[in-house]
Image (cartoon, rainbow, N blue to C red):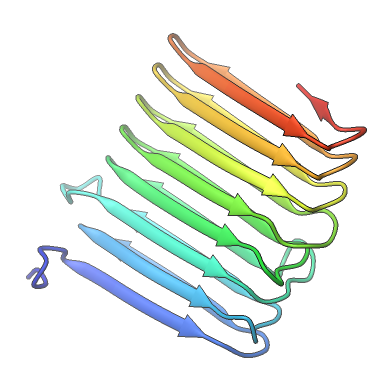
Length: 194
């Protein structure tokens, strides 16, 4: 059965406190919204969605405003399989040392990540396999940050804005035909692009 808006699987999670963790697995026509608020610390949000069996779309929205703690905390992790995947991850305000990672397998998918917290070693990883996939990433106010994007297949688009992030790295790998990448680095002394 589907909901009133036609989405078969819907989940909405709001957390505010220490050690908040959300783990969501959906199969079919999927939508999830996770909010981990300003009072949160040691946050983890992990989403796995699969609509390859015939669902219309996968949609995941994660917002984190609390403090993280390295690679295993302050983490937003999304894996999608199928067509028309949409991921939106926001990590900012008081988010520290955050990680955002997205893996998409399929066509016509989009990723948008905004990571403008404070601290060091904030990381963004995006991997897309398929056709006609887009990535739009913004990262700032972090020392020794990193952005890694890997796209395999034709007709991909990657847009990156990295600002006020000294000694940071940016790596974009595109394998296929008719792919496009746009990079804007501002006030990021000592940073490198490959």
